[in-house]
Image (tube, rainbow, N blue to C red; front, side):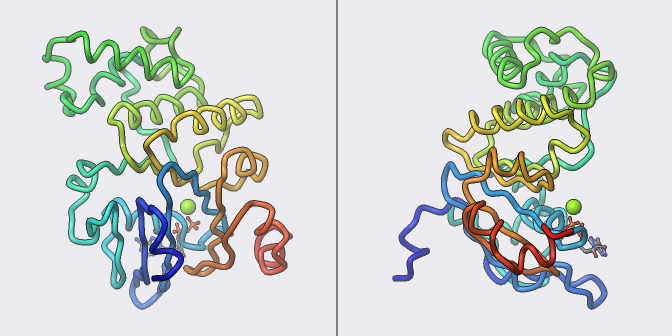
Length: 250
Ligand code: ADP
Ligand code: MG
């Protein structure tokens, strides 16, 4: 038995490769994420970080390799099924309903009311209201429930979108550059938020802000040219000469 088999991994990615017209954006990439772990993926632009998330959530199909989530092979599933198995993913730009209130945005994200029309027609039962209030508290928007989402600050919109994923209670949450464009204070709050939500779930975050990475990462994977350049604790990768050369030195 190898060391990695003894651990309790929620996600196992092995030999993952995707080829776009012969160019391997992700090239024989493997990584293993533990239960309740916050894993941060860093690396230069074009390293393949976003593509890895695209492959896990089924937006892009792998050319080769395996993606096992709690033992189930995600490469055989479509995006919708992957969401239903418990994988939530936030893209770089917030995709919230700007014309709806914060409350409504969270409400329509509640698992029973996925479509806008369905959700607004469906009765606001107590369970949904409780879940919305609970999540609003977590994402620092408890005082903004009646506010139109389009009027929120950029940082608040990012939190709202995280809330819209959290209300679906995913077992794996993936966030692509969640603090881009945020103030220093908002970044701290976001780190605090992520550190509070790992009970029963793993989180994968792509980020460039090293202070933020330091504040959240249990382990860091450094990608370069579609492969793992280095992996381990923040301290370890920070002092890895290869990482300094291709990434941190710039
Ligand atoms: P990162 O997120 O690390 O900055 P990406 O995963 O977005 O990098 O991109 C990795 C490489 O793959 C880039 O060279 C990008 O242009 C290319 N790429 C990503 N998606 C596609 C696609 N759908 N078709 C062709 N090339 C792509
Ligand atoms: Mg990217």
